[in-house]
Image (cartoon, rainbow, N blue to C red; front, top):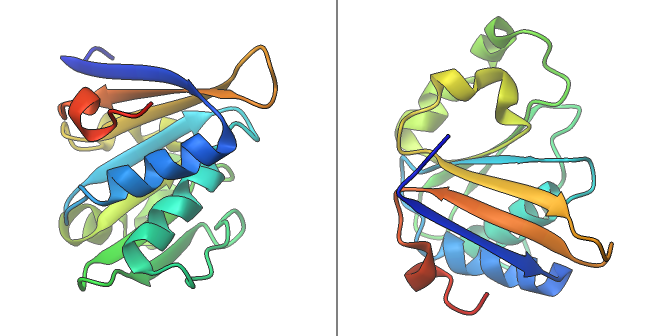
Length: 155
């Protein structure tokens, strides 16, 4: 997958949360964020910070690993959909999760999107998390059509 705008940085957990917060400030209805990476690499931490930035600091954000999807209402009235597709074995199992509604009307975060990558909109922001040599840090890579160096200048 090649995009004209890519950005990569090595970050601490605090940096990861600040990055999510900053990116959330630019999110709009219809935006889709596909979060890929190994277990424990930072997808859920990023999602939690992103959702709290949109819905308020006191928002309780849990991983949808077993429920597969959680929805939230942002402070400006947008629906925020948080998917975890780790346990999905076949793309047709997604139908029951209202993904089409989320992609049209909400801000959508999808952890473990690999099973549906070919069905995501072209404007999807792909964010890849990887462990750095030092396990306290992560490499985070953004691919999409946004100017990452202006949105995330402090990373």
